[in-house]
Length: 316
Image (tube, rainbow, N blue to C red):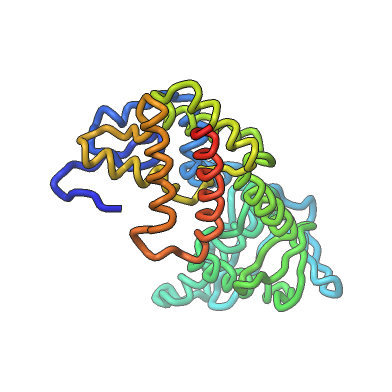
């Protein structure tokens, strides 16, 4: 996508692309945009909510080394090396020390903090107030090491499946700990993500997003073009706006926006202009400006099928 460096860049929340005209940043349908376009903020909000929520702990503390399982209740204390003690509380895992600790040993202090933070994340996940133990790859490794260290003091072998407050944990393909619930949820998410790439099997939220984006790009198109678009959706069963993929339509729209100083409407208001737009999209699909990533091949094939079908309807 070629964009002039002589123009200002603004974010258009209606289609999550750049625009050269600040007027295009006005939200056209706040409820829909908020529900379907701002999901990237929800993980942050969800994490803050989880951290403010008390941990669901066990009623009493017990260890079953034969089953590689532990139950931790509020008030449980874990004595670790270098004179530090971890205390489990509903608000989190607290670090304290005994008289024998070395206040100048910064390495020991940081290690104790790592174990406390990691155990806190593990217990919140096991109790259901946190979806994942950690989100980023680097953080996952750091937390995994902290969990391994602290559970070793309790005689739990994290080299194989283990249980914390009734939740089963295993090591995933990245070498990090993942709960059985998270594994099942991820599998369900991947199935729904694949379904949401389609129009036929998409969930209600994705269908709403498809309808919103379709109306946005076809806002000035004549009714017979809108009818042809809907027919192509139903015949192909393809979602032309899958999440995580910059559609060819969006790319061309942004390019026209910057070439014209704010006009992103590539379909125009006639059948002829709409046909020309679809032909431009198909030409770009066949001749991309940059090398296509392997993960985008399927989306490009779907786009080509959808717009080829749309073009056929428009030329009837």
